[in-house]
Length: 378
Image 1: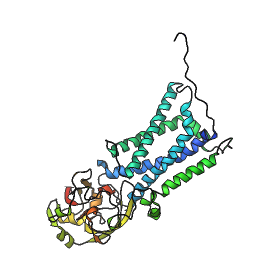
Image 2 (image 1 turned 30 degrees about the vertical axis):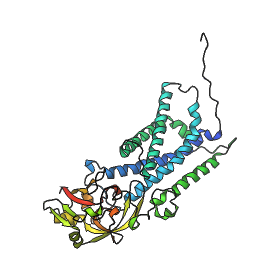
Image 3 (image 1 turned 90 degrees about the vertical axis):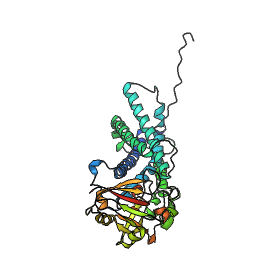
Image 4 (image 1 turned 180 degrees about the vertical axis):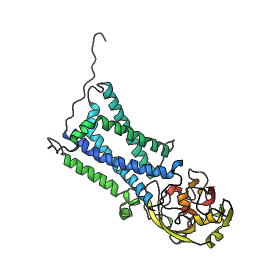
């Protein structure tokens, strides 16, 4: 090569007015709100599904619709974040072409934090969107990775904001500059708002029932399913067959263990509760449930004031075949071993002969096809 000095070509400068820091800051504020709502509601969902030991006995059962609201907001804000994220990336992509690509150690760390933030956020929202359709084309646990990525995003976002604080502060309340060429900022923001509003309107109806007739892209319609309620896991998928239930009995452990047939359960005092069922995938709907109160079943077993329970299902396999019911739920008058749904006997897909329904509780923990209630502590 002799004394030839090789130089890589310098990319052309991009000075379109819509790629300026002010536009990026305006969109970044909206995206930050969506991420904050999604993260906060995700914490609620995680700790209701897997409460740490220090929260045992303190999980809230009121408001009864609490989880419906927080999980609905989680999925809605996550979907709304997708067009916001794409718009944000479009406004800042010319900075990926700056020259030289790395000017100092601090600059290298800044670019690395941005790369981690962008990659983690794209992966997080993509996985979350596929989860709403219950499609898992990856070999790892969705919940574990989704949880870990949330903390990576928050950490890298805080680092990015700390580095960019002077720039953000300078453009936070700055007046809008007139556009020199191309579409102006107002047009961009109106178009982005239309995109966010559209994807929200056509998906939010799975939990916001006033919008249920607009659920064009939502994987669930709140009215579609046996007995007017959607089904995530069918009896067939759980390998539960009706012909195996002829001799079904409920077993309750405790100081005075016992078992009951379905006819004996139906002969006990029946109670009704109007409660929503809300699933982690984002759909929810309120329904009318009838059955025997869990606290009454425990009192019969010699546990008068509730207990932490292990609930065992007849389903074969699956992460939620065995769940735990904490004391605030087991002593609550609204927590039922439900035998009827919307004034009809439970369908097989909804958990016949008996299932759990409790207030302010994730749908994955409202165990179907219950066969045993095991008292863990009184």
